[in-house]
Length: 412
Image (tube, rainbow, N blue to C red):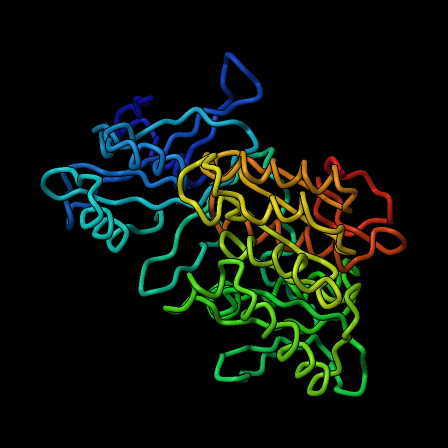
């Protein structure tokens, strides 16, 4: 859907500068939706032949289908624009890619060139989502109905924890210690967070952890940021018994000896996204005497077979269906835009519920996106570490800690 911007003399660009981009307007036909107009202003020093909008998951669907033309902006007076009709609770990271010459295709080499050159929206207000591997950060679209994320950004006046770099059996582990931590002050609850180099070095998850503690949503906890984004990631994060046993039998006892963490499953949570989400759930299946809480975000529960609904797929869900019930709690979330993961996450939820597991399940209107996951991680920790049976938990509307039993998303 395209949008006519008007002439450069009518104050349009002044409006964009004041309100920030993209422009969000009501859908006259349905109050549950918004018309979201992304814009790019002409730069006389760097003229372009077009602009490609890279809206996480929204653009990806058409890239997989082999056609990016729905996401090319149209020329307007003074710039470019493209309007999407999105549900009013949508959240997504996005970038803009000025096109020089012909529009890029969908081949891997073309797409990698786009990802390397895409940049945040210079007209957007608000914090940006950092990136790794030398790529530019993203802007974040959060429509009015998207779940609140009050813990994501650093706050003034909050006591700060500290991070210690370590190595255990040759593997890099960054240890995030809460403010006021003392080795003899435990036992502290412990969070094992996979893809730790992304969460720690890039996304500064320590700010989220400090905010959660300051609000009383979780008790002071030690976080083990396990590096898993190297060449061994496909092996580590694929229901690998050796990797999970390393976490349970080497990493957790080491943290207990060095930093005074608890060794009881009810005070231990493992969290991950995508293949890390699969691994978090597998850890609770294989080592429930160590991992009493599993936080899975957009888990790759299709594993190991890449053919959707093939008889060999969803191995872990089959294990939960057939195996003895474990004493573990689960927080599962998945995006409504994750068309390749949504059915499998719902299937695991149904199996766990049928087997009598304690499951908190949520669906957010977004994709495979750290812009969504950083809020869900905080909510999941508040649920699993905040002890909803007698402590505090995050209210799903405000994200703030509330009394136990506060209204929440549908809980199985």
